[in-house]
Image 1 (tube, rainbow, N blue to C red):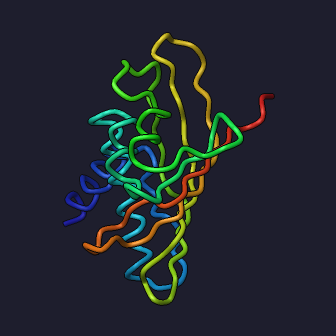
Image 2: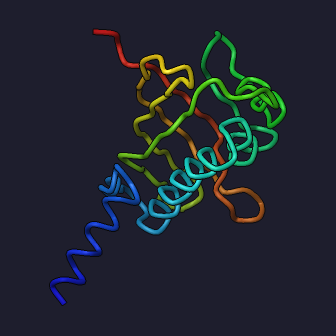
Length: 155
């Protein structure tokens, strides 16, 4: 039994470099579901590319992302275009939630976490923090409503 436990810990560590579970606040079921939606969002980005993941995971009409300008990109098509659209990705964006807050009603919440953008050119990666506001859509699926990220200060 002890050997099984050791193998389980090794497997968890190998699957995710950020094996620690996020800190959950508020409605526990909703907070767990939001954390899962955020992790699934990141896995989709790794598998299908960042632009596709944002298009699929943000609210199709009301979803908005801030970054790279004073005005947010609003809606699925604008977000897809802002994230690079069909162009070949110049970097790989990865992220993970560290804390999740869920409303008592269980229909909205917020995740905050860390991201890293690794250029495919071999240049130095950039990292930072993000906040994503989540809400359930009409089908009961968690969709990003607002996504904001900012880079760490350079040393």
